[in-house]
Image 1: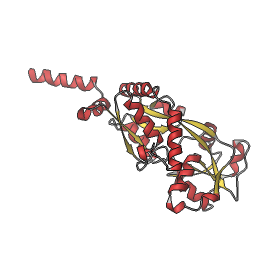
Image 2 (image 1 turned 90 degrees about the vertical axis):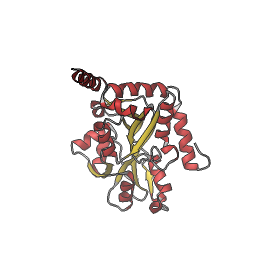
Image 3 (image 1 turned 30 degrees about the vertical axis):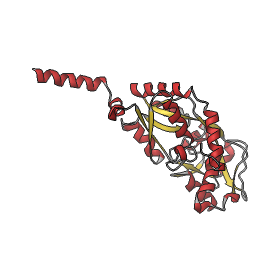
Image 4 (image 1 turned 120 degrees about the vertical axis):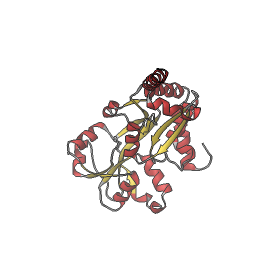
Length: 262
């Protein structure tokens, strides 16, 4: 009878404390695990602080007594892992999209990302409305959220897109004349030109189209569980103690000047 009692008690505890909460408590520390991607200067395993967004997120968690640990994965795998592996509270950075809300809670805004079309200086695209983009072949990164109407047009097959795994591939395809333009954050473009050896000397060939597609907020996405909601609320509380705009601006200034550590 005692064995049966303790077995029932153990099962009850498993139900009361979800798998993701148990994973968080492993090691006895207040640790939050999240996935992210190589998207410098916002996130990157080789960047100081692992990128602007990771640095800001880590500071926000530290402000409420938690340690953030991140795992870098290809983007689609990062999202899928955050959705299915209970070890992880979620993933970031992400643009807001209603479809993402099905599986995740969004944090408060913790960063900002301008978004536009990159082009060859020798052959710029011309557009006033998104309907004008239909005549071009556009490079996109598979799995990325972009601007809502643009994404809706892509889903309806109204824009010719060429999906790839990352921004660098899009940039190389543009330089090779295999696409007409690509959706990209200009800071990502600037970082790639600055840091990738096989792109050195080619920065003068490309530019951001002067008409921005959007300016996107950046967010952390937390699993839709009780644990995910609790950690989201804790993160928001810590974030409120920071000035993320100044943190991001300072980090970007440092990355592109390389004069002082953030």
